[in-house]
Length: 288
Picture 1 (tube, rainbow, N blue to C red):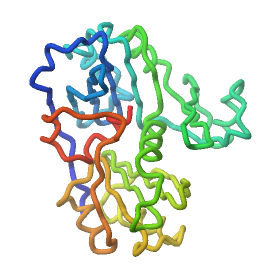
Picture 2: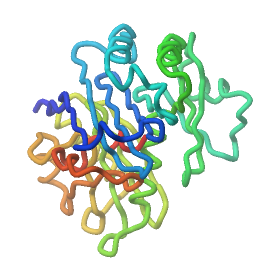
Picture 3: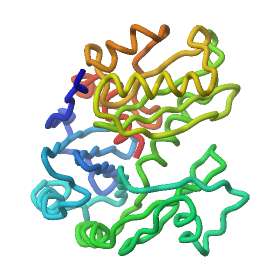
Picture 4: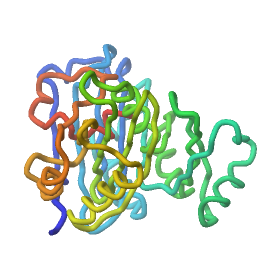
């Protein structure tokens, strides 16, 4: 069964968006192989604007001409200097997690090359993740950094898995009254992120690349078997590019009880117009 296609061009803004002070607003940008999306949050941390640019048959992380084209032509992205706060999350970059006790920030290369194949013409960076005693070390192509530096005078850059994990820990770390553990399933195009939280701790995290709905189900059930997850006492929350009648969700329903769709990250509030899209959508963007 083929995986569901969910990328779409979305543009939503609050009725009074044009009157907000951009200088006191935050611009959040999410870039993956297949989509560039951004949100604008006002000084009260309310999301007032959402725009997405899906890409088919190419990659924003490798076809820098396509990326530059969007950054130059979009009205807000091309004038990002008007924002005091610009934050960018990049998905799909090679990364590895290193425990705090073994981390030495002076030599990221040793950790990266030990866990992954050595990369050339890249810059190594790291994110510290609140509530998680690990650093996320990742590689970004120098040419990609140059594109971002040309478009944005000052910005904060993080790996998308860092911001995603931070939001999951903030919103789902504590067990609910009914269930002793939580399984969080996040879909981003053909990538699947699985988080298992129990007893107030993150017990498992991994990312998988899949091609079909059967692959998707296989990875979820394999993790459940590996970690001895009892679905009768576990709530399973779906986030990101998963929809009510998608092939992936149809299969999950046959094997997993207590299946629910999650809500947007609690770090922001959202203008009424955001009700036009399901709550679980753009969880990664709203985590930036």
